[in-house]
Length: 375
Image (cartoon, rainbow, N blue to C red; front, side):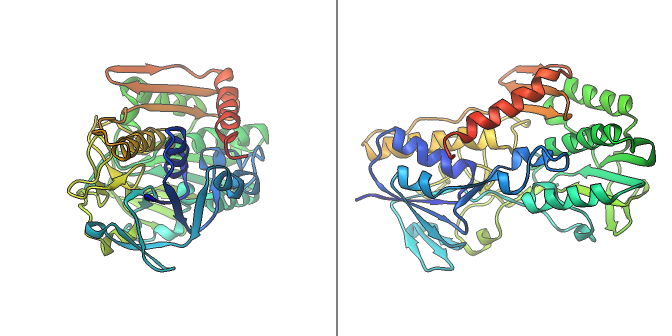
């Protein structure tokens, strides 16, 4: 029987499983990942407010795998011989007829002193650390920032940093601590969040000003000390530093024959095929794809790429020519804890809605809808 190996157990990987089975693909499917639970990171922004807990955002996948007839191999990928369609893991090699790379990316750690900052989207543990540090802070400064991969400017996940700035401001006001805590947002970009569109950036900067969140923008970063962020344009003394650096591909790509983009991700085409390697596919943050310069690194885009990859794998197995291109699409509700701002982009359409209370509840409703398949 045909064997499909899916690397990873995140959004792209699980969407691919669902789409393959929905398309009646009867192949053996092996999911290779070090854990068998889904970490729903989009809701980790609510951990400091107590709306969510780390434990509540870890969803066991054993029943999901059983329901879809999937074998889970508890292992980490260490390399790949793409020419032979063989995945190297710390549990031994796995060969498959089709391989979908959906391991996600990783954040660059080249900036000196980056360990002095918390990188929120590295997992649920950083969000829990932010919650603990925030609760213990009686006065001082919280510095919140973001940057990109200089070799591939689109490799950035900045939305959660805007959310942390807005949510922590809302929390401080509710707790009567805002006057004692300074909030500063920093970025090497003069207008952070440009992929959201100029109108959205204008709205974000206006919201910073309305809330009294200071900005330190347009200055190249030098280093992060335990008590300050140092840039070429000055220093920000800080008691808590949240920083989201640019993204690159997983470390194991160095032990593979896969083609890489300038930013270190797997080079793919619009059908999610890895160039020059039939039967090898990629979806999500591990890949570099053709598309508009605003195309995001986010779970929604990963789902769209995984669905396209699954459709094309199914086509090949059914003897048809694959032709399903993924849709470049950005959907973002920037939450403020008591409201939200919606940004949507597809093609030439760029929709921006102002801060509205129902959008906070819409984001929570979407979480329940999305996770229904895994609970």
